[in-house]
Length: 341
Image (cartoon, rainbow, N blue to C red; front, side):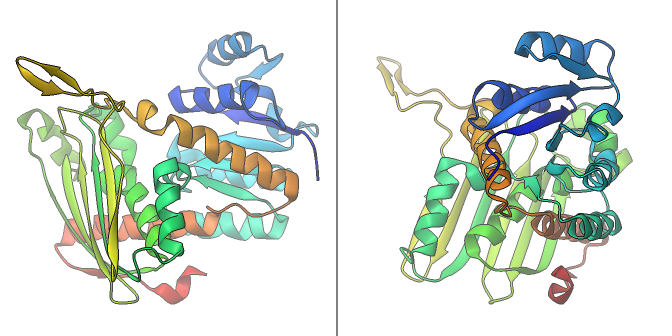
């Protein structure tokens, strides 16, 4: 067991910064030794804030540093395949934000390389580490609701991305719903065998999405290999809160996951009652982002595979790709389960 894992973070946007901060200040056994971002001045600024000596605009400074054990990749999706492969070929362990890659053929190439290099690779599906989802998984596996029969997922976000983001995002099913596809198969402990998706543009201000064959509201209907089913609602137009919830119905009960409440305080006045709602994903998943990185460092120390591997990343990508195809063609898409291993 290695006591201290020396890490570098590539990409210092909002999420990359949180990972860097967690590694630098909150995770026992981790040492953040380098931060990298191509934007002039950004890496230097973060290094100064976090007390890190080494910073750079060039990823090579992490790939070719023999003292670095692991690289956290929070770069644009289009760069993930190249970054993972270069990290693995230079003997680094990898944490990569979702999705694993942008295209399925890239995912196959990545998996081939990391298996050859014996690289530990964790994909950042943070919902698996959120305390509420983790407790649900524990209860479902313990048989508390019997055999899972139906999954319901809701992901509503009122922060509509700008056009440049939509242009490169891969669409609502890859950008947002992929989290629900991953957590659905994780909680149900079943593989998705087919998917039917549709979507609409509900706000007039989002009509630019037509240009990229994207929508601000989507719905996916899933079937699982056991015969179980599910539905996933995905929305970019929720004006009231950042609303992430899930439910699994079983033969002996149901378990509901998540709440819109920012805290467990009710306010009562002569005008009625109210409570604060969660407004953004940092508030909802702050603990999950920390716990997933704790898990990554723990796996590296013990030489174990994480609970969310590159194979899981590929399967989620496959489902999201099928969902996008279903939306564009209006047809149900059947997935080839035998090719998932």
